[in-house]
Image (cartoon, rainbow, N blue to C red; front, side):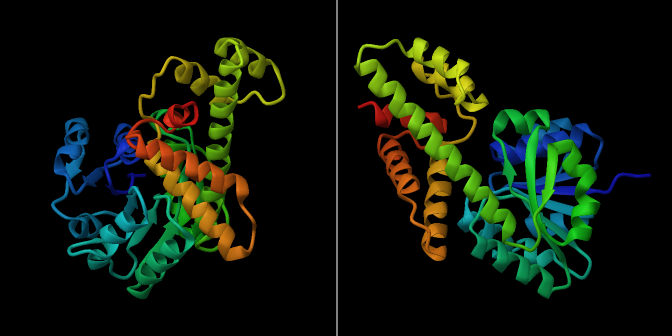
Length: 289
């Protein structure tokens, strides 16, 4: 059976990695980005490059998008020559961006109003898992579209969850990234206070590795933090955005979020130090001052 033609909007760290997986797997792929230079690596792999998001939607069987925040997700959909302009009955749109529930609902409603099918599918994972196809995909919305997109998800991720109606994917992603952010700040504080108290950072990491709080994130990030290496897998500015959105979610449902709020302030301090484009683990630099 011939593979469906797929489109991918947004060639940032995550979008380019996921689109690259689709190209490598033999899906006829068209890409688009506001800055066309970011499409060049995909074009060199064999992808077509669309002039506009609208043109991409019109030419592809299934369209995926991964943008940096709610504002950019809305701009790609509602902007001039955007996704919505290309939606006609039966067109299929899957938004893999990390956004708040309201943005997911707004986009989904607009796509469906023009007869299109919509699925939100934010992902858990950063650059490495995206490149290796080990993401966790958090889908919600049109289940038939989820099933149709599953061969693509199988290329991009190791497991796909279907969580129900639109909005559930956004909520799940914010919960997961909130926990991740809190834990990164906790590790930063532990390393900072431990070293100031005369302990070896390497020893702290070895003890953590042998105990119940051991985790892949700590094992991967801790040694690099101690070495001051913050090559970007997940930008600090995006982590701060996700924690802020999680705090907003807590406000909406009446759940106190003191740890998330404190973590948000730590990431904001990192951004004030100019670390927004560095890996989110660079929050260590703000914590240890």
